[in-house]
Image 1 (cartoon, rainbow, N blue to C red):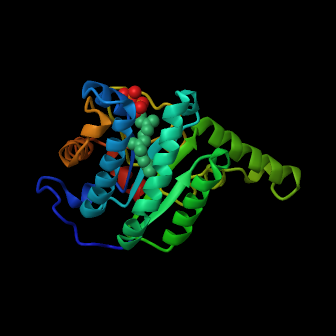
Image 2: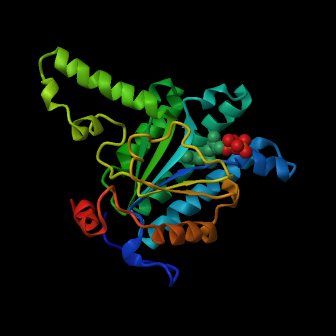
Length: 257
Ligand code: FPP
């Protein structure tokens, strides 16, 4: 990540103690819309705007990477109209927002089994990843048709295939090697996971990558998750004592390793 001057970081946040990578489970769009007397899709539309604001906020405040769970492998079970709406929304957003994201130095990447997506969405996905590949102001990962167990299974299959071909010895399998076969290869693990809407579970999101991540759960629904809510999450994060299984004196070595 290139070093940028921080803009409007709240004075009581320590600029040196910010998470490098934040992951979000954007929950509560449907409930928010229902409470407003709107169709569920209005919640997703609003949720997309909130995600865009959060990405800008992360960039302004010096968070290097944001990963969002936009559509899980289980979300296909939703009503067809809602699934179709989400797919069209992703495609439309990419078309509309790509040039601005590119201008702002966002490097966008998609995590998940993209082969199941409609070809027109895949085209936009491929284009956005290719166009922004050289950017370094902030990394933005969007998980679509993503499931962590299937990601880990796929990684194991790739490794097994290499062994079968004689290109790899079983002794060479390490945590690092397996991590290099995950969709997230090249990204650091999230330091902070935020889930909105009062639910407190991982729902098959980044099970490997969240091993030492701090979790923050809030009752705010995703469409309500604004800068003030993010600030509260960061304040809570900065109050945590991260030890990574080590004693306090050794933590610095873990973090700089
Ligand atoms: C969960 O709320 C939300 C989703 C499954 C969709 C999230 C997608 C967006 C916010 C659009 C993001 C756009 C891009 C390009 C990444 P829910 O529907 O489960 O809400 P509920 O629990 O209240 O029913």
